[in-house]
Image 1 (cartoon, rainbow, N blue to C red):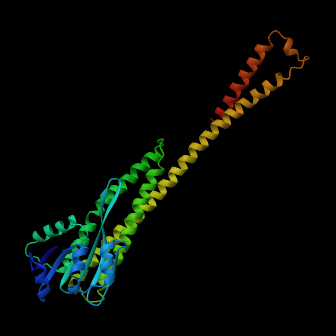
Image 2 (image 1 turned 180 degrees about the horizontal axis):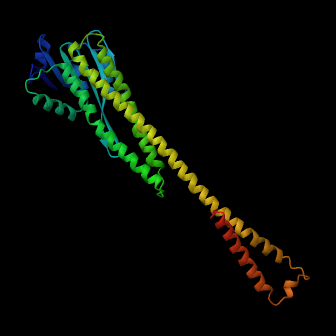
Image 3 (image 1 turned 135 degrees about the vertical axis):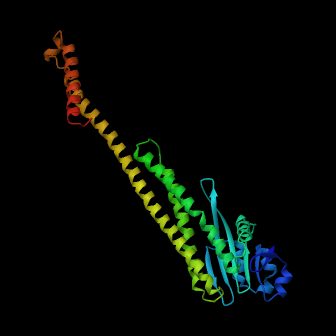
Length: 310
């Protein structure tokens, strides 16, 4: 458990006993679910919220109570070819901001570093919560730009006619964007509910910060929607390329069939073996059939070439 008393321009390490007996100062607490459960006799949070912290089964949300608000956030990051997800739960009251996670997250250190470099700027629980969501989304523009470049590379290869099965690439891109869509939409609801400040937990002057966050997340969500449309266009282009390749294959087989059909007719005709057929007794009959077959073959090829069917 990490506990910091919030002064105007710095964080001061403290202990849980100070939190319990101090009714004037504000505190930032970082806990595990077990530590929260042990001390809930003092905080008196809803049993359902404690259950959500322990089991990590619920989707991101914000529940508003009379004396506090409880939120669930997903901290995402790159992992192999997809994303990693760490759940972070938070409580915000008039005097406390509590982060609850099963493991210590790197984003805590980033927030502490930012606060330590702020200088004389005033620190508050609202600004720490703002800093959390700010850092969750600040790097997402680069992530989406990289994803857009990845989509563009696939498009160039598809339109360039490169022979490869792009089905898995397209499905992976669609799954990534669907994941991000499901990430941003509840995050929008959370920030919007914070700006509404129904239980008046937040300082009214800090609501502007969350409005800025809402607008940023909304832009990110629109970007994801545009990229999903982009991937859909690539999938249609890839399907069209497959259809073109299939048509070319069918055209080749059609040409071969059309070329060999007259030859099959010639073979069938002279395969009747009637004794009255004069070519059977003609000295040059065999050469005649060969020249006839070659003539038909070259005529058919010339005709298809002229009609641009081959």
